[in-house]
Length: 224
Image (cartoon, rainbow, N blue to C red; front, side):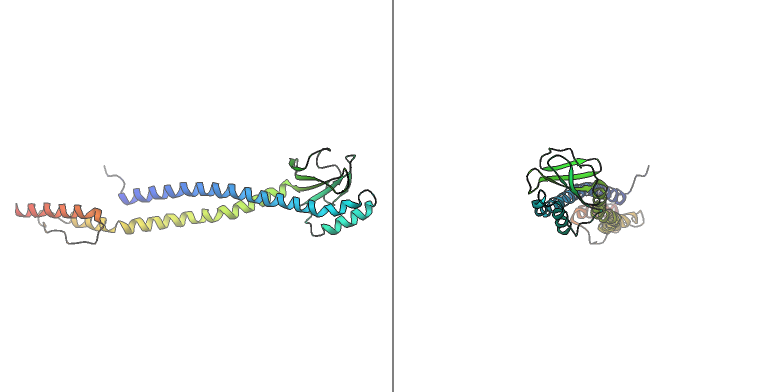
C-alpha cells in the first residue's frame, strides 16, 4: 500500500506548525491590542475630566459661568464618543453634556476611578468645588466598535499572510527535495540491463552515504 510522499508530509507538517504559530500569534496580538486600546481610551476619559476641573471653580457662585466654561473647555469633544456630568453634593446632575443622560451615570458617593455600568464606561474624580464630582463616560458600543476595528487591523494581516506562508513552504520544500527526487529517479533507472554507477549529483551531506552505498551495490552486481 503506497503511503503519502515525503514532500507532502513535510509540507503538511510545516504548514500545520505555521498555522498553530499563526493562531498563537493572532491571540497574542488580539490580547495586546485590547489592552492597549482600553488603556488609551481610559486615558482619554481622564484627560477630559482634567480639562473640566477649571469649570467647577464657579460651581457654587456662578452655575451659568460654569456651564459656559465647560462648553469651551471641551469644545472639541466628540459627542458620539464621550459624555460628561458634573454631580452636585446632593447627588443631582448640576451640569451635563448634551449627549449625557439626565440621570447620574453612577450612584452617588462613589470613589474616584473607573467602573462599568450599563451602556457606559465611566471615570469619576472630585471636582475643584467642594463636594462636586466630575464623571466622564464613553458608550460601551463605541468602545466595542473601536476594539473590533483595532483587532481587525492587527489580526487581518496575519490571516492574509497564512496562505502566502503555505505557498512559500511548499516552494521551499520542493526545492530542497530536488536532490532526493533526482537520486530516486537515477536509482529507478537501474535494472538488469543498466548497472552503471550513479553520477555525482549536487546533494546535501545527508544523501551522500546513500549515493555511495548504491554505487557500491551496483558495482558488486555488475562484477557478479
